[in-house]
Length: 296
Image 1 (tube, rainbow, N blue to C red):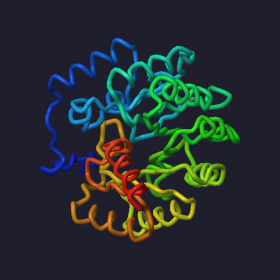
Image 2 (image 1 turned 45 degrees about the horizontal axis):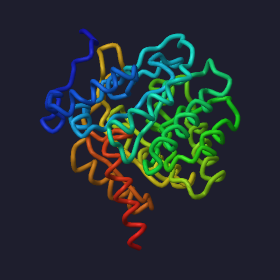
Image 3 (image 1 turned 120 degrees about the vertical axis):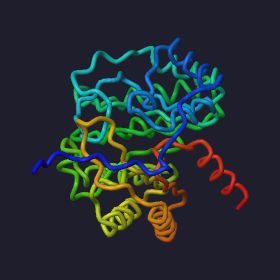
């Protein structure tokens, strides 16, 4: 009997429209003209059509080749090239052209760099704030494993939100994120909050990889103990047959349950849907939160 994996049938709620539209094409044109990478394309995000039609894009800095080989991710693995010192300026110009009120910047892992790319993150933040002072900035960083306190360089550039994803439960790290360490990610988030108690911290995870419900709740507790403010939970989707298999499609009721429990546990902003990704609706969620804080 064959042990070949049989693909699961995708639920109707996970089907998205093909990316089309004038705004989508305009966004694509601006990004190509500026020679910029986005995680929307590199990670095959299912929400690219919706987001780019709103002229929202998540910039992926320091190239499109990652030094890690996470088994869930569609970004290429290998030896990256040199860091483009003019990239921060081109990102800042694109932020202005797209009219972004909130921008998300992420990156590949750059274990080859002494500071893991922290100084380049800082340069991008500073350029954006110079060109567009009213735009809020959210960074989605790697874990800076064995890089010491380089995260301080990013925080000193004053982003409004510091995001680092734990991605999955501890028991699955060895097969989902073999090059990463769960407690290192928690420590990074905790250190960021201790260094600047005013900054909003955020983390996210995928479900449908074989985790138990109790493990998801434990991750929530761990993140709250680390002072994390925002949480995102989304369905894992297998990019190619070479990537780790989907264990199951999590039902809508379970996502509602996770959202309810996360709110009970004290997260100020929670997004838990099958199509939720780290930067999906990041602008709307953050600006709504800011407005609520002002009203209070």
